[in-house]
Image: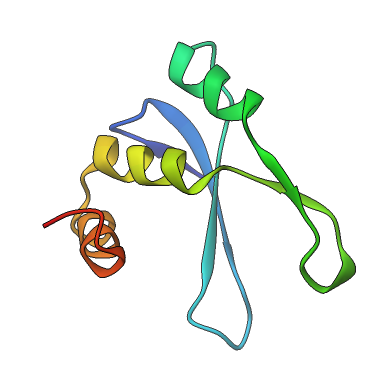
Amino acid sequence: MSFELIGGTVKKEIQIVGTPFRIEQFELTDQAFDQSRFARRRKVSPGGMEVWISTAEYVSLQKLICSRLRDLDDLKWTGACP
């Protein structure tokens, strides 16, 4: 668990064993952006297990807000950022 300096919230990171993938979970705050992102989440069923995820648009916005080098690199890879 760590404190996200830019977003001002608590973040949990989960490393997927045997892969390069990591999941970041951000604590829900009372901020309008967080509330809107939470209200518009989607239920998906990867591998038959139901989970809730944020929409791609909100993930992209969160990455722009954080503006960490790895986030900006992610946005360039998706074509969302020049």
